[in-house]
Length: 389
Image 1 (cartoon, rainbow, N blue to C red):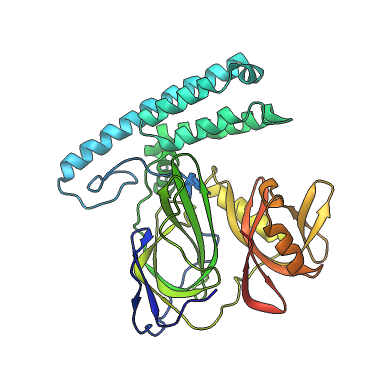
Image 2: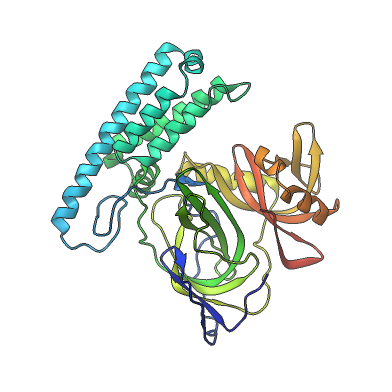
């Protein structure tokens, strides 16, 4: 899909205006150089994201403090509000620590008998403490018992990561500033948009939605063709409603993105104007499976709660294995299993058909559960982005 060269998409915040203004597309500007795709990441959350980016709590404009941005009418009042929220989160983190201690003392086997109600009650208390990131982790803990063979091991792993996040919050004042920002984002404070704007021609790599009963989150992956930077743009909508921001996969847009701060952040905010650029773009330079695993491992040093990291695999072949589908290096040296969700999507068969047994280039998210392919390119059409979600 392409966008007419004479159209400018006008963005406000995380959405797109309902009007599209026809104007002459500006000439490409010099792109700001930056590091490659492995230097910063978002969600937080988090999401999750973010990848887990955690969605920030209900903090309106004018509130400042750790991880909060906005115009400030009364700096002193804003400081007091930030301090009160930090105190509530601290109280919630201590309560969660006690909950984890009780769980381990009673034995993990007991978690399968107590039911989900106790976890939901704990999650509600984290919401009351204005720590939506902690609440999300608690709900995930409650869903693990009874989730299949080996669930006690998975529960112990997630308890350890939650304990690490609690302790990091309680000692955030002694942490390096970028990592402290990551911790604040993971507990649920919005990550500040304070980086240097990056102007580039951005290739839209992928776009997909996730959601729950309260919120729909759209994740858009972009790649700067001149600067080599990978960026994640998040957009939100009410449950059951598609977010307003929508970019065609494979389009190339000229514009600025402003990154969020914090270690391991890829998330960025778009500027007001994104002008389409005529002509296709080549995929990001990729590497073998080993390089992808190294990139994910390096990102984990900056953000231990990261579920996945964006990577591009070059010259890989989709193949069947005993445990399901995988992407293997063309020389057969290493392979990455696909995540269970990826193996159940129609995009898998699109990827298999595109490959036909020959090596292809694939962009996706590499994490501890495996690899999720999001877009692919064949050697016969290296500039044509094929969406897989």
